[in-house]
Length: 219
Image (cartoon, rainbow, N blue to C red; front, top):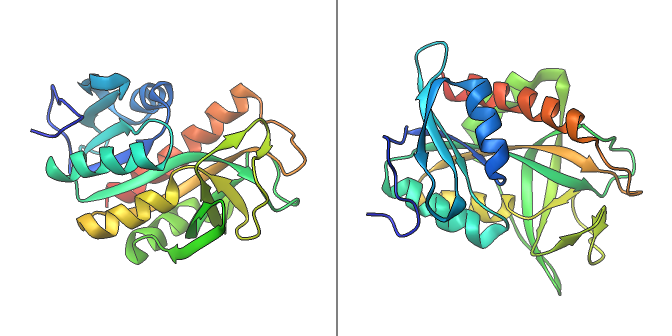
């Protein structure tokens, strides 16, 4: 039995990963037909069901930060997960990125006080499928994954990446070790100047990203 998740329904081999439990519920209602709650342990809400095309899919919250996400991914791998797409949020570092922009992540760096770690990458095949599914709605980007973000901006100066988040580098690294194919699409919820994406627009962007993730994982 996994250490953190306590599944109450079968977990699919394909999973959409989100940080926020509320987003997990919203995407389960958007992407699945008759979703069933598959985990509520530790507040890490998860849902499983079939897509309209009949493909088994799970939506799982990973909590906040890289360590939590990596632990949840390890439990999911133990439960038979083999492919996952992260649908997350980020803060722009590139001043040209607008609120609501979708980013298809092609490279991630774990950033700590001294700077960036070695680049880590998504699964090439899954990432290519995601990029194609997103089409013109997204641009390719690199992300710096920090331990801490605050307010509309980044806590410490970051000199690598188009945007900053808290999970992607950890998921790419852990996924490779666990032989789980990972890809990621992030929503810009705060610009480099601190402009915030309204909640309603964030929900719409998350739905667009989730639909793309479902399309990839249904192939």
